[in-house]
Length: 267
Image (cartoon, rainbow, N blue to C red; front, side):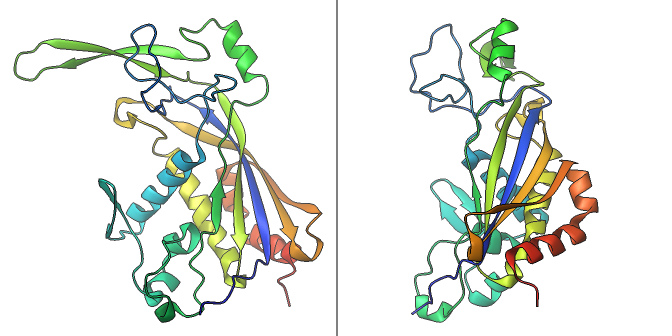
């Protein structure tokens, strides 16, 4: 029987997300559509403000990391495929599965004491403080959003088919989004590099839909990192702060050393 995963501590990564181009993360489409918008953004049902689901950011990070590592898309989920390590040997050397986890193996005995739980939790995040008021004062097309009309051209008949997309405008800040990295083994700390690389890949790609048409460019700013040591869990120790991912990257080895010390994993 697999052992219980020993939680050695947690690393909290707080990051502000700023939109550089319009951002569209879609809702379910079941809302009553007023004003002829074809695609609505997802909103908090209590405040009606747009937000970024943790699953959108986390999923985009994982997808891009799988491409970077050239991992096989060998596990079907609904109509899509992702990568999932099928053997303990593969899992132990896979940076993506070790950080993002895998479904519980069907043959548990073969996996022994391998901890396959996810290390990374990504929270939903709403607008940063003051952003809602700034958007209201700007009198945008919609409530906190803009409408972008696009035209799809029928390649056979050349008939134009206009559609209206709702987007969060460029220059809007979300967060800080909180990412929680669970440390189950001493070796996990080094895999914080995977989190940094995932954010770097998203920054050079896009978040949400319609990225090939210019949507969804974002930057990550004001990175603040804290640690909770299990020996004194009530205390949240600050270990690093950076204004950009580039600064974090340049300081990464020293950063890892500070995290290990804060978690009591040295010696």
